[in-house]
Image (tube, rainbow, N blue to C red; front, side, top):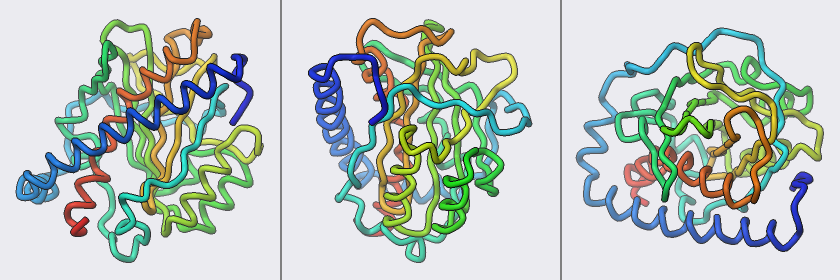
Amino acid sequence: MSDMGYEDGEQGQASRGRRAARGSASGSKRNLLIIGATAVAMLLTAGCGGGDKKPEAAAAVKVLPKVYVNTPPNSQVKKLSDRSKDKRPLNKAEVFGDDDKTVTSGKYTFTLAGSDIAADCKTVTWGQQLQADLQKYGCSQIARGAYVSNDKQYVGQFIALNLETLDGASQIIRDLDPGSSAGFVSPLTVKGATNFTGGFSAAYSQPFGHFVVISWVEKAGGAQPQTMNELLNASIAIERADDFVWERLVLAGG
């Protein structure tokens, strides 16, 4: 974990609170998805269109979170540990579909401002070591969604990396730790929307089978929050966009 600028006690509370919230959310998602498996299959046949704003085409932006927390692999998605058994590429309709254009947790509500799925992982990342490991572990796609809170006070990024295996995904979350100096994923920049400034931000990552999922948040303008729980709770809303993982688990018979 990178240097947060907060007391150790608060750091521990934030980390534990996130795991508890994630477990509760994941359980409810799986129940809903099992009931709606037919609807999931219909969704996956949909096109990749969307009405969100067009992302700007730009070189990789070198932004690092000031806070980085990685969580061990989610053992509930073991059937997704190898991409050879989950070959279908990600698409926008799946990752950033209608249910993910607005995400909410507690008092935090975000709306999707733009999204992108890059087939060349090097173009949306920076750092020699990270890029070498992305190639080594078979990164085939990086999905990025830029979110802005409805009160315009926060910006968020939902990021999903498509690797070959769980082992590769586990290595990548270690590379993403700013303390490793390996590099990071560039935040998606959307014309006409509030974007990341490179100020104080917090990123939370976890392997879900062969995918790495990152929820990354910053106060608009990059100011440091009064407490870490402020960004932690906002990040849980961004993490709601991980529905695609549970949909794939249903299709895998999980």
